Image (cartoon, helix red, strand yellow):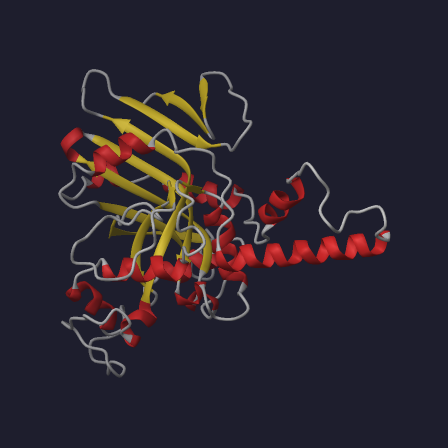
Amino acid sequence: MLASPTLVSSNLGHLLKFHHLKAPVNNLHHHSSKIHLARSTKSNPPYLNKTSPPIKIASRALARLRRLTCTMSTTATTPSSTGAAPWRPLFNTHISKMDSPEFVLSSLHAAPQGAPVSHLPRARYCIYRGMWGELPENGRNVAPRNARVYESDLLTLTTDVRMEKVPEIFATGAGHGDVAQSQGSGGGGPVEAVFWVKGVMAQWRIRGDAFVVARDIEGGGEESSGVRTVKSAVGERMRVVSEEGKEAWSWNTELTAHFGNLSPGMRGSFKNPAPGTPVGSTPGEGLGMGQKVDDLEDEVARKNFRVVIIKPEVVELCDLSDPERSRRWRYTFVGPNAQSGEGAEILGEWKKEELWP
């Protein structure tokens, strides 16, 4: 069931404020360096012996660190999240009560030249596809699957790269990516997702940054800055739940599994004429309405297919189930070692506050 327009109309001023105040995304894999520099052993490694000249010691250590950092950045993630978000269990319970997990996704679109503001809101309905790394089981999905190595609190949706939300996510990110860059992985622009769960009379508002995963996420030689951004920003909020299969875990396998999780008709929509182009124009080669795709490597469909990952920074729940005592909570990601403030409670890496609705 679709949300009430009154309830889903989010405070777009908050979204604009979040866009201007958020810190830049760190594109560097600093976590890899921290992990290996902090590691201690009972005995010195071979290159730290009393007879080794200082220059050789430094050179060997630096070379080893570079190799390890390079390996981790291209094949795996560098998770630093310590536990599940406190809002996650109830969110999952509420979503399970929806006939179709639809939500409104708002992004920022550059305003026309001469407008009194820099950006304007854009909103559309999307389908929630589960948390990144935890694709729901689907007996009809024949795509290869990663082992359940990771879990996260990162919401996913699928989209067509030709839709406006993709360049918006790139243009409003810290790197201010252009249209050419938006053809690959990257992004980081601010978004807000709003769910209205009528069965329990609850509204969820999730604000954070959005990242786009394309086929260049792996196997394309030297990684682009966009790929590095995704792996760093998303990877740090992924939690290892099983060491078995960790070395074989693949970003591209996860991407293809999302494509396979769609129906043939939905996969075929990625071969539609370009969204927003005039009906009277001639579609490109292989494009047309009403196609069905069974081949998980269909070149045209896969060229346009993307997974978008939302990295939450602020999550709000408004419970309207009791008209005489409506309640509202706000969860803000604060990271480890945060201090609780007045009226706030620290739960893991999140600060929880109860607010008036």
